[in-house]
Length: 279
Ligand code: PXL
Image 1 (cartoon, rainbow, N blue to C red):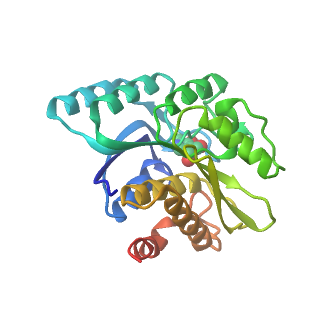
Image 2: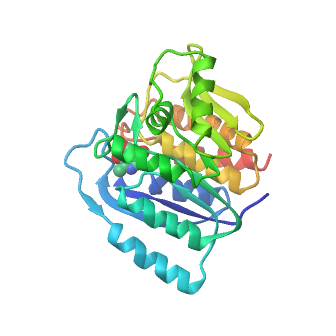
């Protein structure tokens, strides 16, 4: 099923290529109308930058929501990423109740952690509320660290398929239909995702080249592409696979540009992404 209009709720990091500043161009380029709510405005992302500014926009959210409700604005999809603080979850749950069109889809990327640790500003209390929030989702897109923190599963850097399947099944107890678990690797040189269909109890994997440099914001590039794919009517698995291929290309496009250490040059590969969509 093809959906028309998506709402992206996450912060605006004014510089640094993550969250809204990648979601908006990527999903729009995929041909999907994209509205936004900025959960906060930061001068940069909080990773590898110090001294960043942070303007919390929590107080603005109910006013935006009330205006939209009055005007009958609705969305075929709601996608959430980095959420500035715990209070916003309840507000967003209200927006989903008021503004999700019939048959609309909720996609949650529970952005809060990576490599076994929380990002600055987040803790386990935040993760517990985020897990509650994820119960609203049709599809969630956590990395392994986020998945472990959501459901209290032991975080490991070395694991096998049994470990991944155990984690997916535990995540499925949140009541979501499909899970795209990112950052999965079983073999040197290959990195990808596990896509779990909870109704069918079926897991499928998709891997791409594991490049020996990591960049901030690739999780957001990845998730935005999955959201665009689903909105265009691809299956969750097809969207997840397309997003792996695109993200790998974005990293490669940035690899030799040493001055570009803060994010990926995703713009260069947008023609590839659009071409793949219509293949
Ligand atoms: O890419 C995730 C993200 C989004 N927004 C902000 C962040 C981060 C990760 O650190 O700091 C502000």
